[in-house]
Amino acid sequence: MSVSLSPELIILMMFSCLMLLMATGQRVFGVMGFVGVVAAMWLWGGDGGATDMGFNAAIKLYSWYPMLTLPMFIFMGYMLAESGIADDLYHMLHVWMGSLRGGLGVGTLLLMVLISCMNGLSVAGMAIGCSVALPELAKRHYDKQMISGVIQAGSSLGILMPPSVVMVLYAMIARQPIDALWLAGIVPGLLLAGMFLVYIVVRCWLQPELGPAIPAEQNKHTLGERLRVLSAGVLPVLLMVGVVGSFFLGYASLVESSAIGALASIFIALFRRRLTRTVFVNALRQTLNASAMFMWIMMAALAFAAVFDGLGAVKAVEAIFLEDWGLSPWQVLGLMILSFLVMGIFLDDTAMLIIVAPLYIPIIDGLGFSPIWFGVLYVLTCQIAYLTPPFGYNLFLMRAMSPPEFTIRDIYLSIVPFVLLMALGIVLIMVFPQIALWLPERFAG
Image (tube, rainbow, N blue to C red):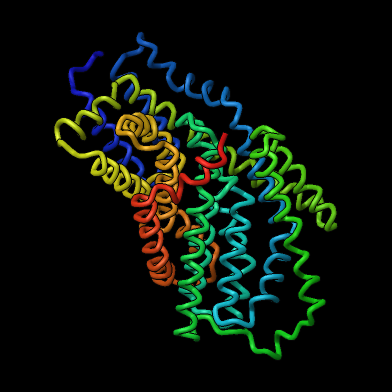
């Protein structure tokens, strides 16, 4: 190595440069790739293969066969959204739950979970929530902060429940079975959704003005009408169960099940007579945008992580935690969770994962913790990072897609109770690991 600085100091310098350049407003993948390649050339020079690190990262990315699942799952979600299936789902929830205090808030949360699960990402739920649910809730005089909080928190659950794209990425990097990770996310996801639902119901019962019920004269539907609109949710739910079930039961590989989901979403849109050229092109365009974003971020983060590997950063960080600071395993875990929360303020979840996972996973393994359980904790911290200022991803999306009367203050205050519930969820899963591990231990192969 052509410099004499310690690995710890070099790691600190790289992260400092990363944060400083991102503060200038540059794109995450550009900053990360630039810092990684420049650091490699500074450390090893042009003759040590450093100039090839960026190219090698790209080749490594393209050789990951499971990467094919990303555009498939993303397309499936966008096809269902663009074809108006989400509108049908919301109408169904409106008919069945609108007469209750906070009923539309509960229905919106359930819709966010369903849409995000079909897509595996948070952004689809946000788009549907702001375009479909927000106008209806505002028209029914729901409180602005309640509307904003429900949409943001509900959509964030999509990265925890199968077929979570973030879980797929974690599985590839941590070399853990995706079926175990998907199973591990189900109970925590349902737990958080249940906590959100209880909060909405109790808060709206105590303060009816936050989520007023639809007057009875505006919600007169016969049993036949209610059953007819109930059919709107059958096909999307069958699609989700079929995609995940075909993989879990061994009838299809992960890539095959994602392809089945993408193809089935086209047939559902065709069956509902919603498949038009505009719908198809819009779904393709949004899929391309989202997939390209993931690819660029992962490629840059892999180049950045390659420098860490060359420095022996895992051993250096492990020595700092266990030898220099004398921390216990649980204290080390707590610091890791805290670091995820801090980095989530500045970094995309994918970038954060690829930078930190090569450092943390070996340490977690060495401390005797389950990498599956740690993966669930990581995703939960990503959810909190999505909702926390100043750079929370969902906060930006909510501000961009909501009407002007939704001020930045409303949007920031709206997420406080939901973030506190998520923090409680993290504590519960840390104290009771079986919340996440029971299903994988029982059913995963």
